[in-house]
Image 1 (cartoon, rainbow, N blue to C red):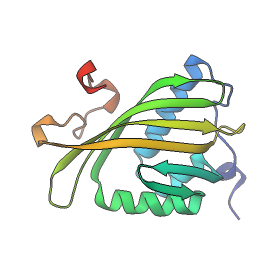
Image 2: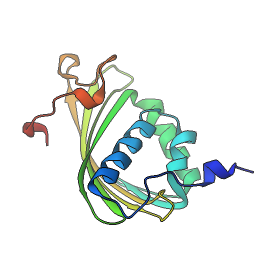
Image 3: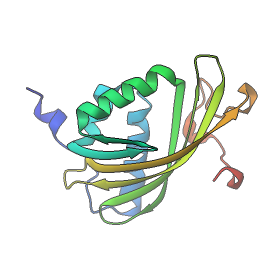
Image 4: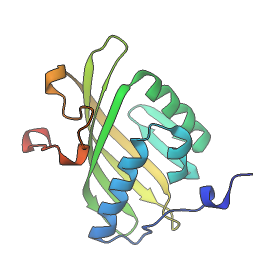
Amino acid sequence: MASTQANAGKPPFPPFTLETAKIKVKAAQDLWNTKNPQIVKNGYTPDSVWRNRDTFIKGTDEIVDFLSKKWAVENGYRLRKELFAFTENKIAVQFWYEFHDAAGQWWRCYGLEDWTFAEDGRMRKRQMSGNDVKIADDERWFKDGIDVNTVEISEKHW
């Protein structure tokens, strides 16, 4: 049986303020940057529903399966999320992540996510829309040793 800790939500809890919404966004960013599906799943309700581009997912078992496959092919994955908008229990983010494929080609994904939270602070709905753009190694933002939060992302990339 899973521990109570793994089944409990993590603050901040809805209703969100500007400050707590920003904290929640960075917590999600840090969680995903672990690239560990078994850890990431704890941020979601057991019946969480996702749309990730053209893939529809329900529940933490499917989340783990999806993320395991994703990070098996998205090598060097590094992500940044920024608050876009929020209400009492919803948050919208813009994000950028970079990875390279098996051939060594680097990619940057630009996108938006729409999140809805349960009262316990875990996400119960996630919708993601993103577009991948080929980039050269010298165009990368999130190189090893760089804090993704310190990278200047200009209006050109919003």
